[in-house]
Length: 207
Ligand code: HEC
Ligand code: HEC
Image 1 (cartoon, rainbow, N blue to C red):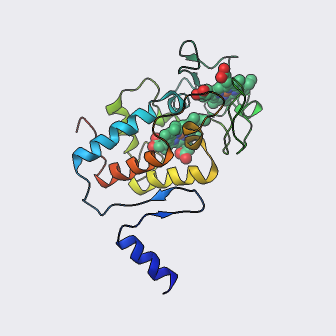
Image 2 (tube, rainbow, N blue to C red):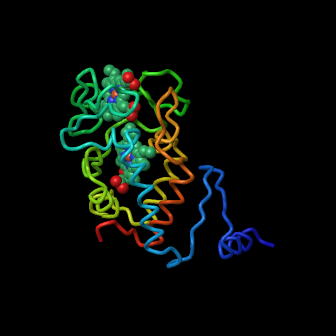
């Protein structure tokens, strides 16, 4: 049988396919098969991830300050050493994030060293603010293409698999190493929750 036919049959029968590029299993349920209730439950788990310090510390507001928060830090506080990301969100106005957070796919092993990932370290664009923002507001932002980098549901799912390929910030958040507490659930579970939430048409608690 031709490879493409096998692939089509696997997709139709709902068989999960693991990609060699990102190592994740992408299993898309048929449209309309996920209830609103199941979608809201998936959202609650997504919220626990995106509001976790490993994610929210970089998703901060227009003051352009990265945060040090979570069990690794005594109190939630702006990044030490007067680090300021500037409007560039990458510190180019003063001291670039890269000066300490080098770009590297190697594991993080040294406690309290500047963490690194396979993408150039920087704050998320200011529209993607999560630190100190409540769940319903984050939910409304993430599904709004005007404020999420122009992504539809498929784009949000693709963002996760792309991050896994690049060993980017989401991958780091679930596997920060160096004694840091990971975001809850793991990359595969987060991908599945995103797929479920999208299949349920991205419900938010306050709809
Ligand atoms: C002078 C070196 C230096 C520069 C420049 C720097 N950082 Fe850091 N950063 C660190 C160190 C060291 C840590 C780890 C501190 C610790 O764990 O005690 C850190 C930790 C962080 C954390 C917390 C990670 C976590 O959740 O545990 C974030 C977020 C962060 N930096 C973002 C940035 C951003 C964004 C920039 C650029 C605007 C930047 N940093 C520039 C040294 C630096
Ligand atoms: C080092 C800082 C940093 C960390 C840590 C980080 N992000 Fe981001 N995030 C970014 C940047 C920069 C972008 C913009 C790049 C893009 O849109 O592709 C972004 C964009 C996003 C987006 C797309 C925009 C949106 O709001 O819908 C999502 C979703 C996202 N991040 C999820 C996460 C999750 C989940 C975690 C934790 C597991 C995380 N990020 C941790 C910097 C970070």
